[in-house]
Image 1 (cartoon, rainbow, N blue to C red):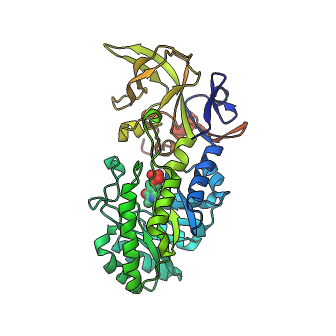
Image 2: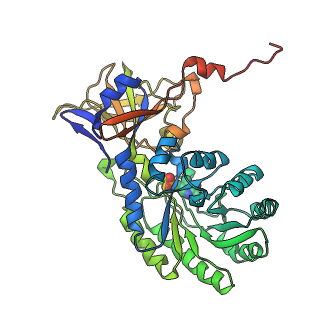
Image 3: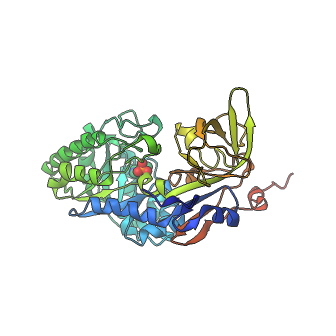
Length: 421
Ligand SMILES: *Cc1c(COP(=O)(O)O)cnc(C)c1O
């Protein structure tokens, strides 16, 4: 569910007309709904009620300061995957004790930053990382709280580019080697082992892969406890999918997921952490774009928009589907036409949808991509020298630009010309 609905034939974000934002900031732009962000955070929080838990928003999905602040204010923790994200989380007011640090390539500097600034735990992904973390923690004079990310070799049944829990993926250590690695960690004076971490992939639309993975984590918890380790915290990752194609999707709800967590892991008495990203931010955002041209090709017609793959790369990168709807609600019974919906970038991959049924549209009309709040703005670039597009946050009847569109001058001045030129 989200807060982008038609009212009297016009698309709104909460109580603000999309056309009003477009008139104020120009297209294309991203717009996020505070109410949807909060609703999705609370669904997870409520799904784990009765268990000691923390929902750590995976901020790589959307790391705008205003989005982070919105979630931090209601008690969200953050899952960060770089020193930059760690700093962003802190800048948004998240205390170190609510930040977990994931990622396969943490550098010495990133580790030091987090140890000095305060951190809830590191999710360690390899033995060499463990060795470095131990050394840096001793230099800083603290004990680094850790979980080890185990790779359970489970098929997440999602797009290959976002599956992370199979043995061929780069993530975590093979679960079969976990005992060895925990024994190694226990001997390191700079580390304090507190739990286990697992994250099997993104945009999961079934619960079964989670069930398989969490059962393995439950067994491992008991094995490691028998080996003498104190396992008090389980970080279960993120990855719950969202219904990108509304007419044809019914992914599990956070409440179903919470029930599964309780059933598979509840008996262990551990504190539970989860790291949802997409499900919190995805449906909380639209990408709003204007039709530049309607072009008739041979055997197909093209809707050429002012947004492109540099603004939203998911269709080009993951073959992702996004619902694309007109900002003025089409009249009932209007005839739909198949259109290829494309951007202006000089690549054939700059195609958002092929042969999508759309109502009649003309130059100057606005369309909105649904489910664009996660892995949208954060993955954008200035390819084709198209400045990054603005982000807008709505709350009730107010809206604010939360990242301004840079001017062409600002974009160009980021380059510097060496003195010999
Ligand atoms: C990307 C990622 C997540 C979030 O995944 P979503 O599909 O956005 O929920 C959580 N944890 C880790 C370690 C990740 O890399």
